[in-house]
Length: 146
Image (cartoon, rainbow, N blue to C red; front, side):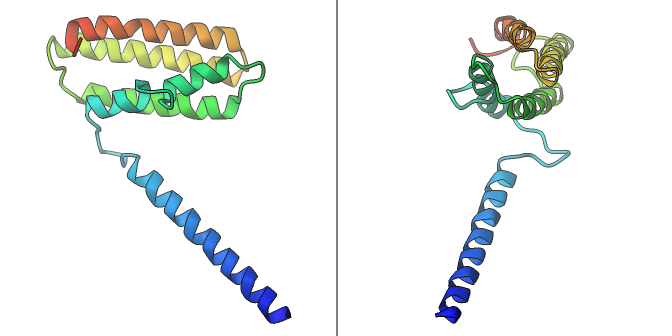
């Protein structure tokens, strides 16, 4: 009986390690390496498209009575990283300078939201995110797909 229990524990540990490795591999495949640049479409999909997009998740959480501040900070950090990549992309139309300015405006707003999240200030964080979202129309009107 003792041998079977030890064997069961060993199998459980190995299964847990395998599951953890699979999660790490899947997560690594979903993140660019340091110098890699994702396309504008991929960045926008990850940040904006769907109920599970990074921005949607943060916005929804900030409507809760007790937000998950650590998760929101992590998601905002990822949003900042991904959106910052867009300065390395060429805009579909319009000038690179105007494109870069809008990207920087977005990043600046996301950083303000992240700072408010760090300080557990829900309303200012939500206001900063609304300001970030207001850059979307201008960018799409001047540079992208309508």
